[in-house]
Image (cartoon, rainbow, N blue to C red):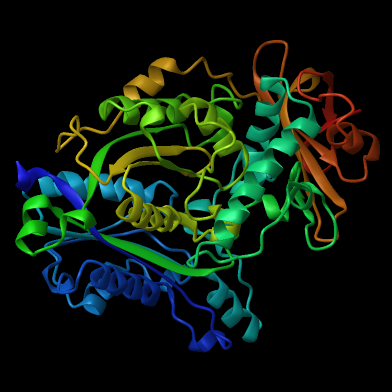
Length: 493
């Protein structure tokens, strides 16, 4: 049995703050450094024996993709199994941990290495020095898409997650002030965790009021989110970890109190096209991943000592916390969240995994990690523990897509040409860098039950104020959609 029990033996985190961006590490350099740190954390001597290498795809230096061969060379390994994720999705580190556990249990691998890194800060600095354009998030290959949603500005995460936030607030019956207060309190708690976490990118605690109040240094980005409520991708961070069998760890003399047992995971996905979701205020895929990860391991929320609930934007941990039943007064992160700990795109969850391992080694107990990728699209949750989880069995089928799909409601058909009366399903407002409204976008339902989009020009102050002042909840109100400029439908106040 010990040969089929996966354990984490080493974790590593690195950050790079070069004065000269041309002297900084690129993303592959961060990955290699992180695995070397993980090797030292595991007692040394593991990297040459890595026979499975899995890498989270990176955006910073696209010319380095696929990065697997470069990482393998950097750590001096010749892995039989080498894999890079198709996109830099936030669920990737937990997915790759679960897959590593399965490879160990099937006897396909003995030493698995997982790593990722992003040097977006360095890449942007180099581009600026050479007077080159640099927008890695928007120009990523998997986001070079056209179509109905993108024509209204729905492309990158910050343009889409506010739709979920506003729909969720209305569904749970919160006022705008109540919802912002909850967001601010969660984010303030994360800033305090980051302040005491050496590997976090930012170490200045922030108050709830500072976080939600728009102003100098905290400009509005997309309603209701300010800069301090969104993931901070302007970082140079890498993290990695090593997984082996319990038997191999013991053969190599790893002390028992340094072994962290991998529990079973659960994963489910939602349609990538945000307009093809059944609803915006809940995610059956999130619920399936979280609840089944608990049930597979025969755990309840009361059995958990620490959690990491993915925190790219407030709507995600708000929803996940309620699904899990995690008390609102307890920390939702062990690292600091994507705003303060740092948001290295798809590899974020490798950092709290490393922090969780250290917490469990020093204090015992069980940790739970919930990861989210895309636009609340990809969901993967898993448990890890300082003690064996009796219910955990590997290899396991972590796919709970059927359960998620069974709970999904009907999806409204899309009507791209609709003009007439409609009801606001959700919405957001985008802002210019000076804080002035750029434009708004409304997702609406027609009387026939179809879904359609409408633009709100930035100079339509009456409608912008209605959407953002909190006096009346816009979701559920009705109005007309008419022809607008640039072939976009317009919502008229």
